[in-house]
Image 1 (cartoon, rainbow over the protein chains, first blue to last red):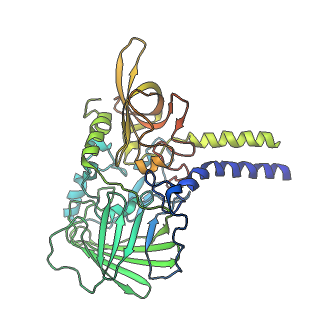
Image 2: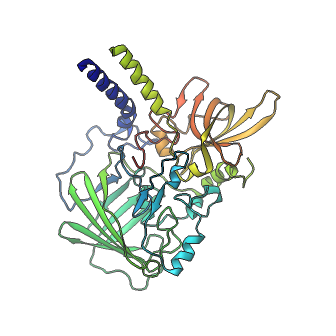
Length: 294
Length: 141
C-alpha cells in the first residue's frame, strides 16, 4: 500500500515537472523577452530586489498563470457552469453589468463580439480591435494573464506601459484634478493620489468607441473610473475598480478585487500592426468564415 | 505497482495532457469545430509571424494532383516563442504534417493543434496548447 502511494506521488511529480520545465526556462528568467535578448546575453548581476515599500509599485506585473486562475475578460465575468464540452470556451463566460440605459442597450445589441453567449466568429464580428483600433481601458487590463504591464513612478506622474497593443497610461500625481472640458481620448485622462497605502486613480474623458470589455458592453464619454491599488507585499498588487457611467448604466459597476503578481519577464513588443492584421484577416480569419477566398 | 510501470504511466499521462484540445484565444473556438480534428500533409507557402496573430499557409495535394490552399490559425508570437516556435521555424517549401480543428464553415482553414516538421520536430512543444499557452493555464478550473 505504501509503495503504491509512493509510485503515485512519483507519477504526479513527473507529470508536473514535464510541463513546468519549459515555463521555468523562459518566463521565469528576469529581463527575458522571447525573441529579443537571450538569457545568456543579459547582465549576470541584474539588480537585486529592492526592500519592500508599500508605495513603490515599480516593476512588471501580470495576472497569475497557475492552474485555477480565472481568465478575466471583463470587470465581473463568471464562467457559466456548462458541462457540454462542445460549447466553445469563448461562449462559457458571461458578464454581469448593472442594468443598462436605453442608450447603452442599443449600443450593446449592435455589437457582435467573439466572447460570451452572443459570440460570433471574429471574421463575422464587428469588434474594432480586430482591425487594430485601440482596446481602450479597462479592457486592455484584462489581457494581463498573458500580456503583462509595467509601472514606472516618476516625481510628478505614474506611467503604466501595457504590453498588449503597446499602450501607455499617464496618471498625473502633481496635484491637478481631472480636466473639465478635454477632447475625448482613447485612453482617457487620469490623476492619482495616495490615501494611506492605497493609490487612488480617477479617470475620465474616454472615447466611447471602445468597448468596456470583450463582450461588447458599452461605455459613454461620461464614464468615470475610480481605481484603488494596493501593494500588500513585495510581489503582489491588488486592484478594486468602480465604473460610474449614468448615461450607460443605472448604477455603479463595482468590480471584484483583482490580484496581480510580479512577473519575472520584461515587457515584449506587442503592437497591433494594421497591415499584418489585415493580411491575417484576409488569409486566415475571413477565409475561415467564407468572407475571403482561401 | 512497480516503478517501471509507474514511469510508463507518467509518460503516457504527460503526452495525454499535451494532446488536450486547445482552448482558443480571440474567439477562435467559435469559428472552429473543436470536435473535428484533421491531419494533413502539406507544403508551406507562407509562415506568418506577426502581432497579434501568427498563421501557416500551406498547399495540400491529393493523389490526383489537385492542389488545395489551406491555412492554420495560431496565437501570438509571445506565447508561441515560449513553446519552441520562432520567426525562422518555417519557410516556404517546408514539408509539414499538421493537425487542427476544422472551420465550421467547411473552408480549408484550421486552428492549430500541432505540426511536425520534416526532421521530426513536433511543435508547439509538449506542455503547451496549439496557441502556445501553457496547458496549466486552463480558465475556469
